[in-house]
Structures are given as structure tokens and as C-alpha cells.
Image 1 (cartoon, rainbow, N blue to C red):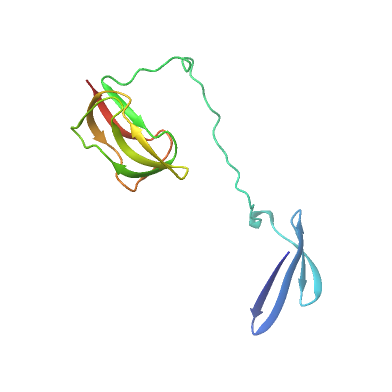
Image 2: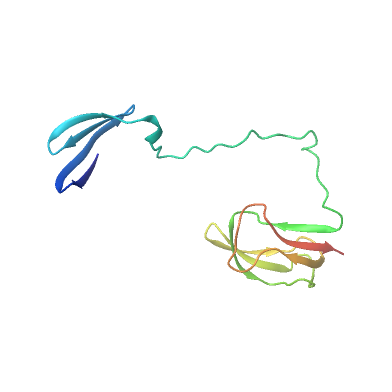
Length: 142
């Protein structure tokens, strides 16, 4: 499996891990075979296990949610990086106006405004990495 070279108190050791199963490692040290029991706490799992809390569905999850008051939030459709921002706070935007250039999955995407309004705030800057559903821009609807 894997070979290692150790020097302990001036003595050289060639160690080869032959097999590792159920907490027992079979090692060959300078040509001599050994079985070594490994404690459970020191076993490192190669593949991380994803643990998420159970998803809780609210009773009105099927209903369309209205935006908060007069504010429309432009959210990241996918995880990615901000390459360029075309607007600044206070700018008036119309539907289909470009807001920013955004890279996701090695593709550049131009995010266009879905609504007409005034740019209230920009929560990202050029070079930022965003996750899916991160709020990037807030528009005050007109």
C-alpha cells in the first residue's frame, strides 16, 4: 500500500503498510511482518461524512412569499465569483438592465435586473465569492 522511511535514535527503518482492515494494520518493518492494532480514535476516515440537520417544512411552504415591503433582493443563482459590477447605490435601473458580471461553473454570466427600481445597496464587491441564495443587491421598487 504505502512505504515510509523512519529514523529513530539513529536507526533506519523501512516500513511498508501491507493491509489495513478493521483496526488491524499489517506492517512490514525491515522485512519482518507485524500486526498492529490501531485505536479507534486515531483512525482517520478518508471521505468526510456530511451531516445536516433534518429539514423542517413549514405549513405554508407551498405559498409564494412576497418581498419585504418595497425591497427586491437580487440573489446569487449559483455559487460563484463577482467579476464586475455595473451599478452603484442610487442608480435607477429598468427591467433587463445589466447589474453585474458573475462567474459560476467556469462560465461568465451577466445578471440582469428582473424589476425596475433604485439600487438601495450592494452587498458584494469585485472579487468576492458568493454562495447560492446570497443577497448581492437590494433594489427599492418604484
